[in-house]
Image 1 (tube, rainbow, N blue to C red):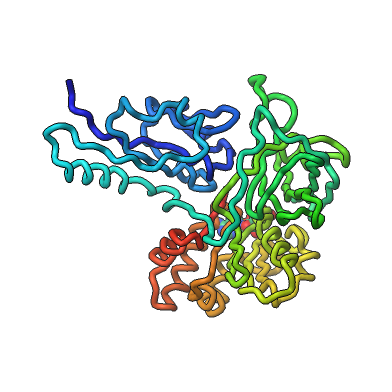
Image 2: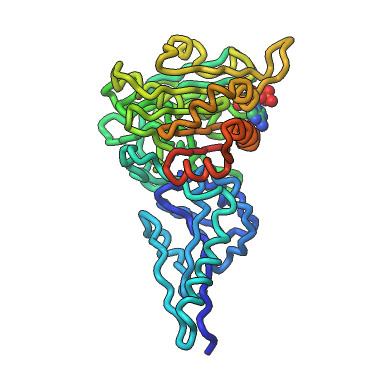
Length: 399
Ligand code: A2P
């Protein structure tokens, strides 16, 4: 009989996963599947190609455990049952093997992990513990459309603010969490549509205070099943909703925490929720919030009007436009550099939390800009970023 060989198994953290199924759709060999509850990786199929790692908006896909032997990998059934990921179990040395050798082998296997999403996402230390996965594919919450309002006046860029009422159903959400929307009907293969994920743009006590209704910020995508369904919804219609999802992209409850929010387009949804929550939490002093928000034009920037009414003392706003007539294209990363002294001041504060939400393409640009800002401070951005992530102060959700 062969001696057992420790095996690194690819897994998904069910607590952090927002059930967007992007990994499943991306996996070239069908190694990822789901049931009503969880999305899971088949150890017999996964070939570690890593294609699924960069597409995951939360980093929940970047999880690994070493098991004593390939035969002892967690099964699909095991993974479907999980509410949270099991801790790494100690691996016992095989008879005759040195204990230290096994520790080194496990450490080496695990060290290879976390290359993709850049490390384990953690919630802010002071964040409220969120509820997750209360409603799933098999048992979605039915919500009533209370309102559906266009937010932009740009024909080619239709963004809607949609308010959903769970009625008597408990549906507790925290700012930064997402919900799934199940469009009616079936796909070309006759299968029910998978839910499409949207960040909640309302604060915890509801779009209307005390009503626990939720709002979504939805951009109509050409050919998009869920976005067209949502943007066309009439008041009074019923919508099937899964979730809530997400346990790390949350705001600190500590009012003194400082927030640096960097977003594009509908990536502003959680930032709206954070801002409203701070506004509602009462006029007391807060650590302050600074936002870099990129859009094509003022007319295509969601919530442009309401944002103008938010006082500078609560939210420092840098609205950045890429398609202003007669003006050079400007992206959020350009403005971060233009305002490097202000950003350095924010970065140097141990109470600062960074939130990045929107187009995946902006991540590299923002990283480069923050590298330069950190250089000005005599610091290495990657070291600082990794420390902030470790401390639950660096949060990214891009798609
Ligand atoms: P553009 O498309 O003009 O190049 P929306 O989703 O509403 O279109 O907004 C996205 C905004 O983000 C646009 O202004 C878009 O500019 C901009 N954008 C596109 N690519 C990047 C990138 N790599 N980094 C930062 N911003 C980007």
